[in-house]
Image (cartoon, rainbow, N blue to C red):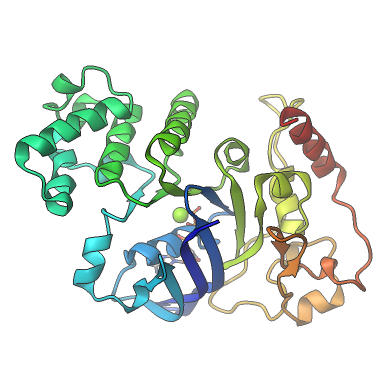
Length: 346
Ligand SMILES: Nc1ncnc2c1ncn2[C@@H]1O[C@H](COP(=O)(O)OP(=O)(O)OP(=O)(O)O)[C@@H](O)[C@H]1O
Ligand SMILES: [Mg+2]
């Protein structure tokens, strides 16, 4: 499989009044051509900082790139100057954010906003760009695109606005589309429609997608592979089947247990992983998840686990995978959901 993006040992900190926040502490992953990689993890685990650093959208004043490589088709983006990076941003790699209203300019028609990157990056004439913009509106499922082209964002519903944002992101046929929780601000039915749209678009436009979410529930339907983040690191990565059918890290078990299952009623309280994420001002010495891990061993408090190999595509950073560790089965709630997943995807 052809790698389009390779992130190696990325480390990023923020300088704050309280000290240095070690937000990203050695993240490595790759993205293959045409695949959707989901990045999941609790709030603060580092999903947005990781992807914003790819786009170089972190605040210049307070953030510090400590080390690492971000190879886009073999070229290290961290070595590019701002001008070279501008050529890549919005053209080769584009990004969709959570809230469609803040990504759109309220004073400009949506048509103009879609035309803007086309004119900037593709050097098409105005009329060609216009034609392309209308086609894009149609592609993302907006009825009457000719009329809609001339309207302003406030004339669109939330779900329709997010479709416009997707059209802008796709305007220059990017090779990588980063979607940072693109549906969390929308209600559930609209969420499902936008996810459906992204899935069908990927087939049509052949873009590689990084899909960020804290909802493991949507991952099974959109992603090919999953990277689980905790405390500024990727602690497990695998194909969707490997993560749902054979999860290895107790944190991944916690995330899976937090998903509703078939018997969950609306009034039932969902499982929540006890405790709080690590303090990144002063990250713990061993496995950052140890204080919340009921299976933690002595070594978890002393030494960071390496990524243990489970298969060619599946790795997890937990001492439970060490050959000398006791054999531990996932808790019942996880096994129940593993079975459910298996039945749904037979
Ligand atoms: N501008 C900033 N200044 C200081 N710390 C920051 C800044 N931006 C992010 N952080 C810290 O970096 C860490 C990772 O944040 P990030 O936004 O990547 O989390 P996330 O996984 O995207 O969470 P969420 O699900 O809430 O979006 C957090 O500890 C956060 O507090
Ligand atoms: Mg985020």
